[in-house]
Length: 79
Image 1 (cartoon, rainbow, N blue to C red):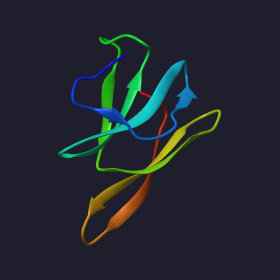
Image 2 (cartoon, one colour):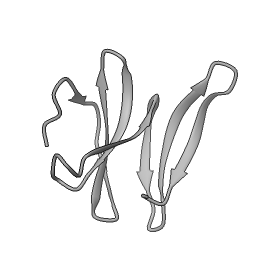
Image 3 (cartoon, rainbow, N blue to C red):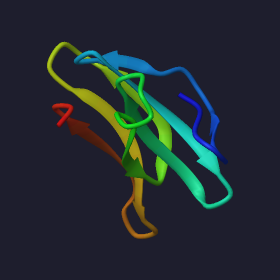
Image 4 (cartoon, rainbow, N blue to C red):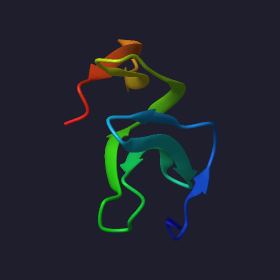
């Protein structure tokens, strides 16, 4: 899937038959998931900071929350 204006930054992970990957444009870094179709490609989170891994039950990613909090580890069941 090619998303206009975005470039892939790092390796993705497969979780629940979807590819999770992060991209960057001139406004920030974003976590996306795709089923391989343009219609099935969605933004999962903004302000992604680079950490991305999955277990059997969850996907984990780091996200910059705020200046006072900084970077936090977030998790999702993929929904």
